[in-house]
Length: 188
Image (cartoon, rainbow, N blue to C red):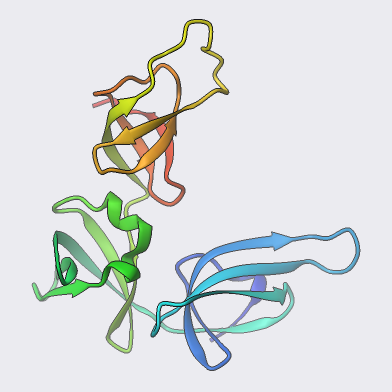
């Protein structure tokens, strides 16, 4: 199905130069002169290689039909991340490269959506936010409580995120999985 380039969104799968590409990031640029264009960071579905593409916003691109299945994350081993189809109960692994940096947010029993093209998994959509615990962070420096100053914090999944100065080690926080960014203190 053909769509305008300005409708490309992360998570879509498009055809470009005869290959299937998964869209990772998009940015619409409006220069001072000339028409607007969209730059897209894409990953080849077959090889996993990343590339960048650019179209005018009025150009059309081929959006591929993707089937989505609801799955549950089970565990990680040498074959990769293992998931179970919630409808058929079939278990299958996805390699670490396909899941990418988002793999750090996977938690046992997490509900995810996996996109398939011709029966082949191409991308994993995680919940927008997850609750994680801060394991390490710098102590608060007196007088440095401006809300715009953030400090690095280590999470229990091994990832780093910038957190407000009032957050201490042991605090549960909500993290945005798409931007790997602090959202708020967990209220649970």
